[in-house]
Every structure is written in C-alpha cells, then in structure tokens.
Image (tube, rainbow, N blue to C red; front, side, top):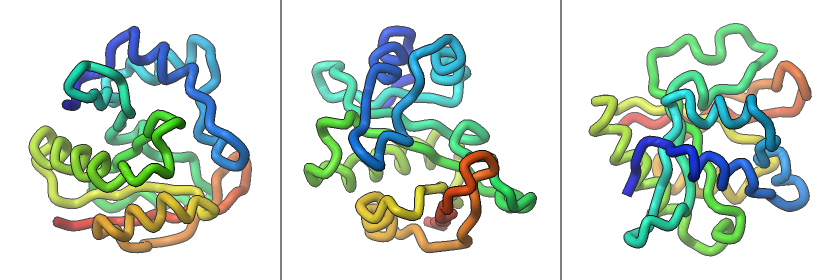
Length: 155
C-alpha cells in the first residue's frame, strides 16, 4: 500500500542508515530533511500491517543537481525510491519497484519515467534494468562530482 507521507513515517525514514558506499542514500536528521520528506512529493510504502517498508518520491524531489544543464529537459515523471536498509539485497526490490511504478502510472497518468542512480550501485541498476529501464545518459553530481546514471522507461 502506498500513501502520502506522514510525520511519523518521515521521522522513521530520516533515522534510516545505509552502510558503506550506500551511506550516500541516508538522510540527515534535521529540519530540512523533515521538510523535504513532507513537501508533498513523498509517499510511504507499507505492508498490510501498516509497517513502513520504503518510500517513493516523484517530480523534482527525485532529481539530483547535475553539472549538465539539460539532464531533466525531457517531459518524463522522475521517480526516486528508498527501501528500509534491512530489506535491501533480500530480493524484494522487484515487487517494491513494480508497486511504485503502478502507483505512479495511476496517480500521475503517465507512461514515461526517469530515475537517477549512483553509477556504483550495480544492485539497483540491475533491478531497474529488470523492470525495463534503460540507460539514457551519465551525469555528474553538481556538488560531489560523482557519476550517476539517468535511466528511462516507457510503458
């Protein structure tokens, strides 16, 4: 089940800590993070008992600042996502990703998606390719200068 983000779920997500190189996906515990998670672009992904398993964000909140000025010039719905750290790498990604795409197709009436993923994150890239995303471009983060893949999907 996917619902609009709530205060309680936002606090829980801001406490998630990813290990090693994946730590770039951890949020900072501060007011800016809370405001970001509650800006209307974020949705909580819950199990049948209302336990938080992950989140999705759509639109500008799913983008990163890039060196390249035209990274997001095509009309597509940007999608971002995060799964509870303890669930990552456990084979639950496909159903999670599928739920987010199905939700977005219905909510935003779109068939064209774009996501941005750190180039080192082979685990996520494999999942995205498995769901039909294809490499569109490689960009550099404006602040960290690290490389990211922009991937697109038309369903």
